[in-house]
Structures are given as structure tokens and as C-alpha cells.
Length: 408
Image 1 (tube, rainbow, N blue to C red):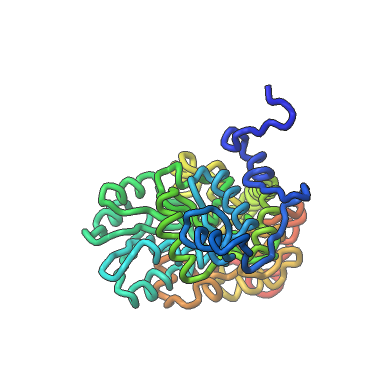
Image 2 (tube, rainbow, N blue to C red):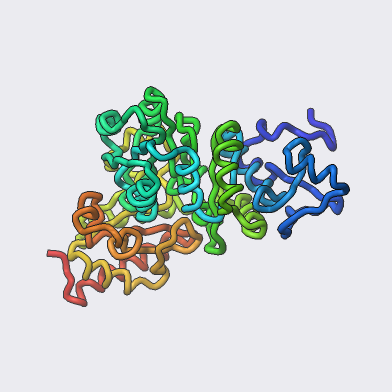
């Protein structure tokens, strides 16, 4: 029995408790809420201490680009919950993705990535890495044979997101991790759509998992952030050195916001997921809807994989309207509760047209190959009452008849 004042090993706590108490530091004032250490630098009691800390011979803080107590609390809490040995926080999700790739490669190396990526991630893989002499190959993420065929002796990293943005494909993370390790490469997984509540890539064999903390982790549209998680050896050497020297680190204030958000993350994601499932069922088979894709439905193309590696269908629904761009725009413009925005994972329900927003820089042919058609919309389901959201969707769909955009 645990007595008063005795500390329990945080690893023995259940996930919801970890997200409230994990990584907490208390100052001499004994504050209840985590403190914000909004400082650039730190002072030392002596020159000898400054020398020892800068050399790494003595623990302690030196500069907030290197580390900061508030940021460290967020990193430790995320690592504890993710089941990672270590974590480093970044200024945004894209900073996390970019650092996780660049920190592991050099000129002459090779990266293999799934073709179905967020537009900015595609830019990093297709355009940015090659500028520095790192070749890249894109594959169909669902085809394990393509991953195997793309591997070269100089391949260092495999990269994917699952579920994918925006079509919600789901890839076999364990199988792809095995392919990476058989070829002395590492697997990086962008887990933002699943959130750390519903999928654990590290447990499936991935070497690094990255998040845009801007999405579900904040979940309330307030601030940017990102995080990279993995083994202590990898995070505290290659990743830490890259972030320390290049500077895309998380601000202490944003770290504090994200810490407070983690306390309610399970409650928010579960309710959003319940709403998303009801909405996907409502949309499925509607005469204006060509297709609905939701990882929680049995008709999802990768339903068997989802059962193995996810704890639920997530908070996003992909829907394609008959009538193409005109119908998609008309429908979205008539929504009242659901707002038009390219963000996701928010408490508010948000809808976007990927072909003209998140994936607009791709050629029409490239978008078509990914399934990003003109009638496709990505719906991020929030915390509103599901019945109100369904009524909003139903009214917008009915308006298509009035606008002469009825399904044929």
C-alpha cells in the first residue's frame, strides 16, 4: 500500500494518470499547475558551474534553445505516455518531421517514403532533402513489395504517416518496420492523425514517432508545437544535436499550454471519435456522397490492419461528393457549425478541401494518384453534440438540390 508522500514509479501509472502527473516539476513555491519558466537563459552560482554545465559534466539548464524546465516537463510527459525512452519538443509539427529526417542523414544517403503524405512533408522528402544530396523514392505505402524494392544499400530512413492525410489509408507499421530493420534502416512514423491515444508506433517497431502537437495534443486551436520520440540514444544524440544547433525548439509558453492540454487528451479524443463514427455512418450511402472513408468502419480497405494496430477509428472522416469541386465548395459554404479551416484535431469541427489547400502544390496528376479528387473533403470532427453536427451536414447536403447540384 502506498503511504502518504511516497512517490510511485510513473511507468506503473495508467495512461490517463500519466497525462495529468507525468514529468511534473515543482518549484519551492509548491504550485498546483505546472510553472512557466519563461526565460531565455539561466544564471550560475560560479564560473566553474557555468564551465561544467556547458561541457555537460554537471546537470542543469544553460539556455532555452538547449533545454528549459517547462519544455522538459512536456517532453517527459509525452515520452512516458508514448512509451518512449526520450523526447524532444519542437516549434511545430513540420519542425519535428524535418528534424527527424535531417538529423539522421547526410549527402549520399537515401530515404524511402510513402507517397501519401501531407503536402509540406512531400516537399521535405521530394524537394528539400535532394538539395542536400539525399535522394528519395516515393512508394505506395500499402504495397510492402514496393517498400522492399525501393531499398538501396545507402537507404537510411523509411518514412510514413498512418492514417494518411487526407484519404485515411492505414499502413502496416510492424511489417514496414521489419523491412527497415532487415536493411539496417530506421522507420519514422508521423502519428498525428491517430494521436497517441489510438496508436503506438514505437510498440509496433518504429524507431521514431513524430507529432504535430498543434493538432489533438493542443486540440483547442491555440498554439503550434511538435514532438519527436524514440530511443534515448537516438533522441539525445542525433536529434538533440540537430535541434540545439539549428534552433527549431518549442517555446516555454507553448509547452505550458500543451502540458495543460494533455490532461484532457483522452477525454477529447474519445468523444471526437464517437462523434466521427456516427457522422461517417450518416454520410455513408447518402445520394450526394460518392464515398466515405473512416478507419472505424468495417468497409475501410485496411480494416484488418486497423484492428491489429489501432484502438479506434480516429477523429477524421474523408468524404467525396458527386459534382466535384463545385459541389464540394457549395456544400462546405452552407455549413453553419462546421467551420472551413485546414487545421484538424480541434475541439471545433473543421472541414477543408485538400485539392485547393493542403495538397494544392501538387500537380493534378499527382493529386489523382493519391485519391485527392476535386470532390474530396476532409472533415475533422470536434466536441459538439453529434446530433447538431449531423443536422448541419444534412442541411448543407439538402442545399445542393436547391443550387442545382443534385446527384445524378
